Image (tube, rainbow, N blue to C red):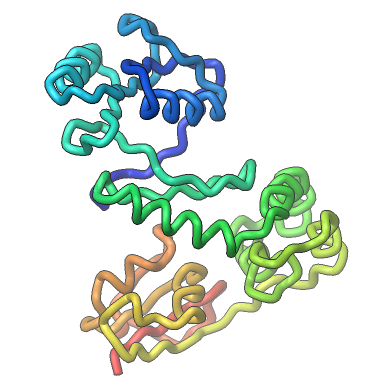
Length: 256
């Protein structure tokens, strides 16, 4: 990763904005949507700072002053001067999907956002709210954290009762909890990769990688493939696999 993605709570906090005109107005509107208080005072007790100046020398000087105060600074259209960049955003409040290119191409980020806008239903935000409201019920039904995660994963699978890509009714979570059985079954699944390119993963293979608890991979399986797995999934060489009973989803990954 060239940059670390981070969602920041700016509600009621000051953000310094240096500049006027179309670029500055766009940034002001974006940060105010997040609840920030916009100020031109460079000495304000701010969380972040944004520089939207046309003149490159003036922009660099302003960024230098603000960084000297220890602030993280975004300099519009000058990624080399930026501590952080502003992503393209798909907003299904409270679900936010941020798309960044590290400043390489705002146009590419926008194109990806527009594509995702067509894929994601408006009901996605209400699904998130319903899941948050049902947290205590979910914990009661699955007290064990690992089993709870697997049950949620199974319910969110394509075509399942709370599939996030389906435009579900507002009571989908209640229906799921009212009819839930044992959640996801413990299982071992073998994956034979046809390519070392992660872009060639099937949708099913990518989904399984994102859900797996244990991964036993052949030594030739590229790191780029394994990076598609959950960050907390345990990883081992395939030679260490023993066919004893394990909880959760275990993947055995080989190259064809």
